[in-house]
Structures are given as C-alpha cells and as structure tokens.
Length: 320
Image 1 (spheres, rainbow, N blue to C red):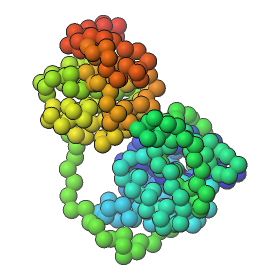
Image 2 (image 1 turned 90 degrees about the vertical axis):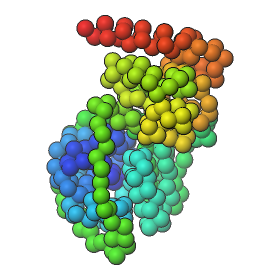
Image 3 (image 1 turned 180 degrees about the vertical axis):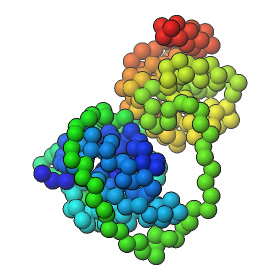
Image 4 (image 1 turned 60 degrees about the vertical axis):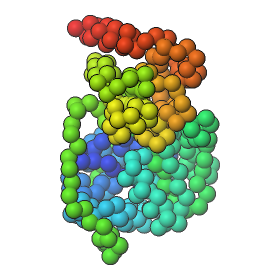
C-alpha cells in the first residue's frame, strides 16, 4: 500500500493531539509514516505506533530548536525523497503551515491548507475545505507533484490502530539556508490551566456584549466548569479586554471544537469564519435579530449576565 508522510508536532517527545488526528486521516489513503524531528523525537514512537504509524523516521539535532523553520523543511524534503509518499500531511498551526508552504515550493508540488476532511480519490487524496469565510465547502485535488495538505485540528477523531511503528533514522544534511535565522531567546507562555484554543473540544467565547475586561471572569468561569478554552471576538480583543492570542475569527485563530458557546457575540462574518465548522454551536445574545442566530444549533435570547452564571451554576451542580 502507498505511504503517507505525517509531520509530528511534539514537545520533547510528547505528541500533540492534532498529529494523532492526522494519523487517522492518513490511514484512509495509505500507510502512515511519521516524521519526528528534534529533541525527544525517538520518544514519540510508542504513541505513534499505537495510532497507526507503520514507520517512524526520526532525526534529532539542535538545529531544529536553534533556527527557524528551514531545518524542518529540509528534513521533510529528505523524507519525501526517501519515501516517495502519496501525500504529506501537516497540522494547520502557524509554524506548520509555513513549513508546508516552503516544502511544497521546494518539491514542486501543490498545497492545500486548512482541510477539514480527507478521503482517497481516483486522482489522489481529496481534501475538503471550508472556504470564503466558511460560506462554501469545496473538495480539491492537487494535480502536480506530491500533495502537501495541512489539516485543521479537531477535523478527525483520534483512533487507536496498533501498527509496527519501526523507528528508523532519517538522513538529513542541512544547507547554508537552514542557518539563516537564529532563535536568540524564548519566553514560556504563561499557563492558564485551560486547553490550547485551537485544539480544545469545547470553546467558550465572549464578545462586545461582555462589556469590559473585568467581566470576562464570567466567561472564564463557564469555560472552567466545562474544561473548555476561552476565546474572544475581534471587538473584545480590539477593546483590550482579552489577549489577541485568544481571538477567534478570520484575523485570529480558527477553531473547530465539538461545542462552541458564543456569549455576547453578534456573529459578524469575521468571527463566523473562525468558528463556523464547530460541530455544535450555542449562542447567548439579548438581540433576537443578531446574525449569530442564523448559524447556531441552539440559541438563548437573553442577557449573558443572567444566563451565563445560571448555566455555570447548573453545570457545576451536575458535576458534584
């Protein structure tokens, strides 16, 4: 069976959830071959094998941490040459999409970004995308070279499927270009204890209706009762009520959780573009004519300052 390269997103050997989702999708079109790079790469093999990786190509070098992007691009390029895959799958994170774009250019291939589904087709892998601010769904095929496809988190379930997961060393030779941009310092992101926004199964977001930074504690309380991530609309971020890193929308982050709760968000197209692929959408807004209600599965017309605390209290009571 044809092989599919899967770029492994990991932190010191701890594999992140989007990679396991990619392995599920990869099995639909071939045998997954994982590519793990950097410190702890070999430690990823066990988890990757449990989720379908037939082989795990590893290469550990300080270059991946010391320099930006290009060393990873060159390692994937070496993997493509060694494996001749039918496709290369990459998570749709900011860094990984840059890696994917550079890789596609280097190997002379087409690229599809932010896919939400993947299936085998007569002319190669068929990727489903939500496009034009999530107003349309398209199916696309790369017609030149080896398809490079980035996939949005939460697009596929994580499914265990035991495989050999044989660890093999990947031979990589770095060019002068790989050392063009050095990382001079890193600052650890302050932990909130909540899930990563783009990977969370549940997201609770607040918008203009929250009416102030001090009131986001109401949104956070609901999120914490559900074990959810906290998001914010562009209006809330622009007003300085919540960090830009939590913005959901066309100019922020795209999310696709199992449950999305929008509180005090009108539903402008900018915001909808970043969350419209969520599986179940609930909106709380006191304006019955708010555009968000055209999109939701469940809507509550009411003041979020009345509704959200009651909802939080009820959820907490049921968990006792």
